[in-house]
Image (cartoon, rainbow, N blue to C red; front, side, top):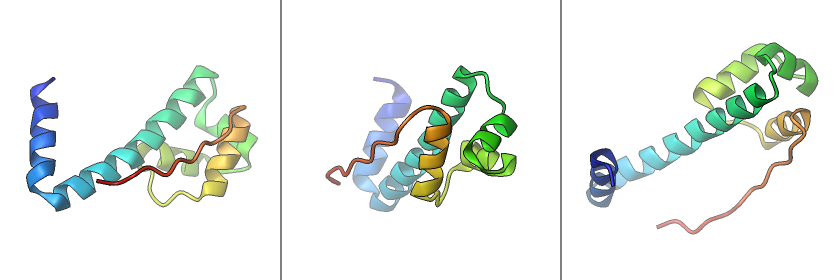
Length: 94
């Protein structure tokens, strides 16, 4: 296990606010990374994906760079434009 991972685990145990903010930030970051990876794997530009999804290039960029408060319907449109479906999962917290 890396020193960074050890630090994060230790800090999350002793600082609940850090834990909450870290987890939320990671989830938002992960959505953007996944979207960008899928888009690039299909050799699409942000503009091309936006056109296929009925969106704007700026919206794609915003999601890829700092995904926050994204509507589920927006993600569904993007997924469909990429030939994918979204899987939503509720997981136990704590």
